[in-house]
Structures are given as structure tokens and as C-alpha cells.
Length: 157
Image 1: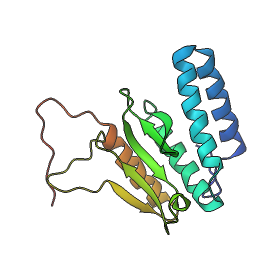
Image 2: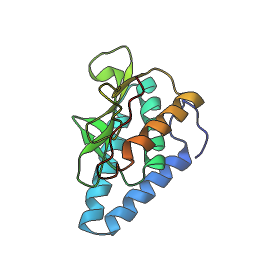
Image 3: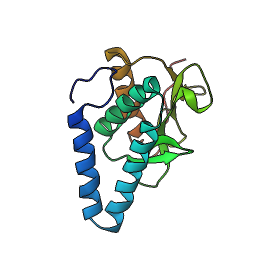
């Protein structure tokens, strides 16, 4: 990944995403749908205020790198990433969406974050740091891990 800190996508990252969208469109109808989803996410991110956009860009790179099988799409106008069944697993809500004081990284019920009777599914996101990136990578990896048949979530509370 190109280092761009909290300044958003690098020129190389932007070019790579445009190339990937073109490749998906060239794959035909299914690929075109994926490309349209990717483009919709990039367009949604581009419309955000600068601070939110920088966070959303880092989330996008982190999610698509950590879980390449998740398909980018918009969900209520927000960047989101869906599983093979089209169900949203993770999403980003910019602070400006509802004039909140912080952006939110959220997970839907299709995310495998279950941990006993209580677990977090939404995180306030104020600044992107190496520690935040490490946490997000861990959450996304856990969210997309398939639970074996009959396996029970563990309780750590």
C-alpha cells in the first residue's frame, strides 16, 4: 500500500482503482456491476468533506486490501462492502452525513463479530493512525471469517 497517511488516496492508488474498474467492466455484466459499485463508492467518497474523505479513503483501501472478496457498493449513500450474497458486512458513515462530530465504521449482522451476549458493531473514527489501521484490519478479518457449522461464539466479557 502506498503511504499517504491521512491525506487520502495517492495518485497511484486513484489510477489503480480506475484501472480495476475498467477491468471489471471488461469482464461483462457481472464485472460491470462490480465496477459500478466501486465507482459509486469512489463517487460517494469524493463528495465528502476533506477530513471525512481522508478517513473514508483509508477505510476503503484497508477493507479492499484485507477482504478483497467483499464488493464495494453504496448503502444509503455511504461506502459499504458486501459479501457474496450482497449483504453489507462493513460500512463507513462520514460525520457530515448526519452532522455528527465523528465518522463511524460500522458492521452489519452478516459480520462475524459475535462474542457472547454483547459485542460492539460500531466505532467512532476521528483520526487514521497506524493503531487504528491495525484495529480495522483485525475487525475486518474477523468479520469475514466463516464460522464452522455448529461453532459457538466465544464470550470474553
